[in-house]
Image (cartoon, rainbow, N blue to C red; front, side, top):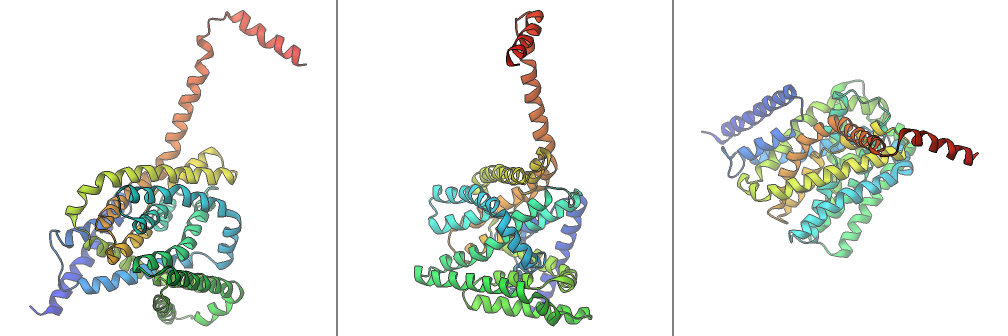
Length: 416
């Protein structure tokens, strides 16, 4: 059979399968990401039906998926919003980084993987899944809750941190010298700062230039500009994903809203391809040896994310119920963790890192919606039980009732 025909059959089967898996996930009311990862495991080396002709195209589609994921995240925020979040919520971002990056780095060092793998795994455990969390907030009807701005602020700070973190990872994985890595980071920070400055001062001008009443022209201009900037960023040794994120920040107003609506289906398509591609490069037989450390890491970092959200919401003056909801909502990991681990897998840094990241994300992308829903009632029930137990302690006292009633009266008289 002709190779092009084989390609069409394979790629068509992948897309059809992803559509059916997405429909199944919708009926079960949870994120389709774990199903996409499992599909990649099934089609990859060591799986049930390894791919042949379409693997190269899937790799290109996966790279476009990462670019569109970061572009769409950038479209969610204006430059002024980002600057405001940096000024007011940076302590929460620092706490988030400390509590959630350190467990990943510690596990990598305990496993003997070295400092580069430790930095990679720290990013895997640090960054929450904006896509999964946004969907959970919508499904639970919490978009108008008082704790939701706190959650979104933490996600925004994580997105901004990616603009610094990804160039560092790229330099470390490439094995460049300290001087070359410093130059790469300086370029990334300079470009990010320049884009933010231009977006704040001239965002309306850029949006008017890109704007069009014709959806087709708007789609072509925004998509072409994003791919062009992403390619230039990668040529400058800066992550292509960071370039796409900065393009999204630069666009605002009706242009951002229109581009978001037009690009959402493309984002969903290529993001699904990306998760499949990551699964393709993970041998299913390599997951069982790392399932226990992955599960332990998932439990630890679920607790640290809950603590992060609780602390940030408490700092913002949110009630205890909202604090627990904020913490439980932040648990899910997903696209960012896979993006970071995918860079390491491509660079061949550590064979077991990809399987561990896959198992880790599979656990937390399923656990995340559950913690978002049940952390608050469970925490309040446990708190109420402890309070009830403390209230029952005086009833066990052997002091006669008369003495108990007279003692407080005498004390109040002394105080007066």
